[in-house]
Image 1 (cartoon, rainbow, N blue to C red):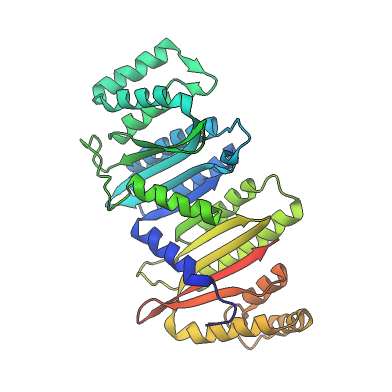
Image 2 (cartoon, rainbow, N blue to C red; image 1 turned 30 degrees about the vertical axis):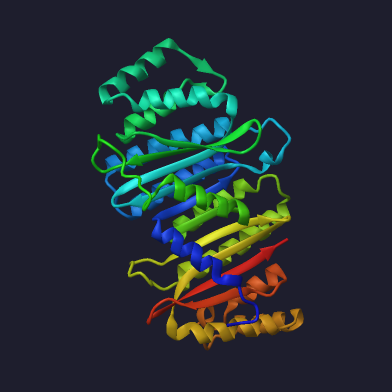
Length: 375
């Protein structure tokens, strides 16, 4: 293990937790139309990759649109308190051929009673009653500045075929945090949701949300890494950083590309999948972006990779540039794999030593966690 290690292997623990709870990805932050579009594209690509049924894809997509629009409409914070640090959250899970979509956002406490009444009303109706209720609300034309009067919630219940699971967590004198969980089962019209303490429960999600807040994580992607998922992740982060200066955006963007390409090209299939699984997450702390990746590598490559990064970390800037040019024009080897050009470029772009950890996973694979920091 290198002196430039990542403390307590957080990436591995996060990866294992995401795998255990079948979490595909999480976005935490301010939601805009462009970010929503990126999240929808990422989901669409993933559903295509796993060969999901077209009817399920359509229902997942519809419920995601309604949930994301709900966050976008209601994410405003009107008071100057610590609550301003609270942002929306979106996550999706796939458990036993059921999809769970969870959204969260701060709401004014004065609105909880009305929202609770709406949710309880919706949950009390059968499919035929829901259809009629939707028509009644639509015909009554009860529209507020936040959109339809519960139309989105009614549509989520109708398309999912299940009850809406929700909870409120106290934030401040005037605000609470509203969690909404929707289950989409393969069999439309399931009588009751399968949400339990052991899989996909709101209690688990609320605990995970605390960790994300503490670590100030804005985006996590856990799944198959390919060029399509890479492009969608870059699009989401580009829009998340709209308010930052162009140089910082370019720097984060370039480093993301390098780190994600590393998984696409060199990750191993530690869980037997046909494509490379891994995790990417990004923290935003003290005006810094901390980018993290984690993926499987062949255990026989562990020591070689460690030595390569330790050597890159040991070089001064001048020596690093010289080593980069030497490696770039070394045509005797496959430079993308043997010379460690990617690691050299990450050091040059971040102007920092690379932090990493290589942890045993099983008798065939290790887990490689890599961290970079962009000021």
